[in-house]
Amino acid sequence: MYLERPGCNLCMGNQEKASAGDTVLATSTRLFQGRVVEDSAEKKGESLLGSTPMVVLSSMLGRFPTMVEYKEAVDGINLTSFAPPSEDLARPAIPLKAV
Image (tube, rainbow, N blue to C red; front, top):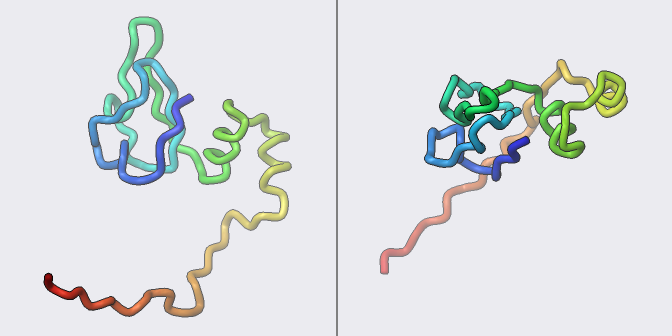
């Protein structure tokens, strides 16, 4: 299993790729064939789309969780509700001084 570093790596089409024949599980939708992983002589490379809880749990376990493990991990989390912050979290711009 390939664990991507945080930031703009595979999603931006950079040169970084998982090892040929590896399985990539990501929350990114830009997983078309050959973009993040190539086939090897022994195994076809897999790019799989997963929910955030599935990707986090898989990275912690180093494998896909069983249905029981997944249900236990998300118990009490409302996975179908999202509310944006009730306040503006933006900070005012800090003026830069020319040197």
